[in-house]
Amino acid sequence: MPVGWRFCPSLASRTRWRRAIGHHRGKGLEIGSIRAAEGSIPLSRVSRDSSTHAPYDVDVDTENVSVLLGMLALVSLSIAIITPLIATRYGNTDSFSTAVAVLPAMIAATSMAGSLYYSGVANFEPCLLCWWQRIFMYPLAILMPIGLVLRRPVPAWQPLVMALFGGSISAYHYWIQVRPSDSTICDLDNPCSARWVETFGFISIPFMAFAGFAAIASLSAVNLWLDREPAES
Image 1: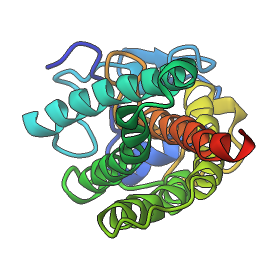
Image 2: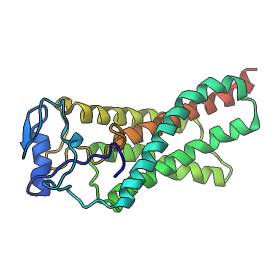
Image 3: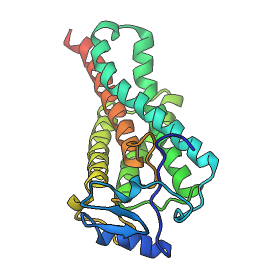
Image 4: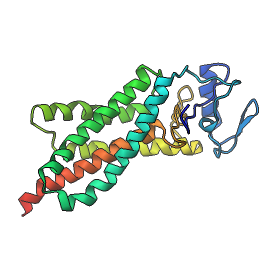
């Protein structure tokens, strides 16, 4: 099992497991000899052992996919930070302009594929905030690649706006996973504060989504700047 991989332990049933997380936001909850108090030890940080069971059976493929997606999330964050820094130096090159146009479509498509894998293959049920993030990511994952194929790219301001809204939701989603007591919209049957995965000890599904949105926003902003620069000059 990869280092840092964690799953939420279950109670007697899937429903009771979810309700326990919703009812005990910020409170102590004891499962066997395990205690999570005041949100300092989230339930999702507790390792699975022989006395507990995950809400779903997780195979090695799902673990490996999560590690891969976690690494891609870190790469996406690096792209979001580095791209504006190097744009002033390499912005006029054809290779940089091509990368700025192609990478957002690739990141959006990968993000959609990852979310579909978790819900369709790993059987992780999306919460309310997950659906809102999909609303902002899926159109980009479909329209941007089509635009590249047809050589009619989507205007850069559109993915920029979508990514800013989606990234804000992802950031809030990750925040309430870190601090469940701050959540006010969690469904007791499917709480947004539950962590299905925690790769490397801190990368959850909302973190992956935020990294994707951040990279798309950064690349789109640079692309928009490159498009306006010739007109200004």
